[in-house]
Length: 282
Image: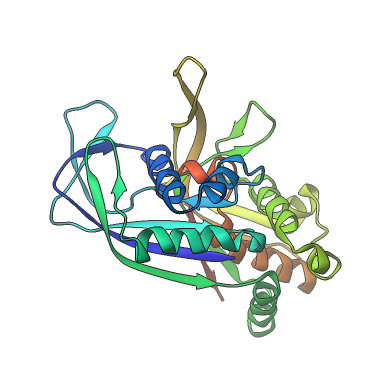
């Protein structure tokens, strides 16, 4: 699995949607389509949200257009993309081809971005479990996991309802589903994590920072008539603390938290939802 960090330069000052992940997703698909149509189609049809997309991260001006903000000409912006499934190596290669070798721009409705820098990191399920085991071995039993939900996070409770609070059961069960779904078939017996929603509820406590906790709605798709399909979610800085958890559970939860930086949290991660950054506080 890989995480790609793009540094973007705007070609001028122009408005973008306040929640621009959906528009960025379309632009990335278009760039992928230009180098490998099959990869673009597979990303779009992925049932597990193989591609994660942060949308534009940076400093913006206000805009007179409703639900928009303005890109600043002399600023640079970050875009973080993740490829969670190791079987989708072709997605990473197509991204590299588009934005490094082909020199493509990211074309939005009201302006374009040049890709100034392209950097990537990679890991495996085995590497993450090893890193988590080392953290647990050198840390006190009560170490904490700090998760910053940087973009609106929509954790599904069912097909129609998304959770609007960083509840430990829902957040980590969501990450767990994607972890188990992305393990290479030949390594499933080694790396599958067999925890339940109840396990997370029993062994963890969540403490969101009230000053950062916000809820909102975000565009995740459009209906057949072109009308917006919205889902609700949250952003927050949240601390997850262990409560009488065994070493095995602390290791598993820590590995899942580290994995979420590549896979995102919740649904609609390709449309700009669920981008997180994680720090382990010993």
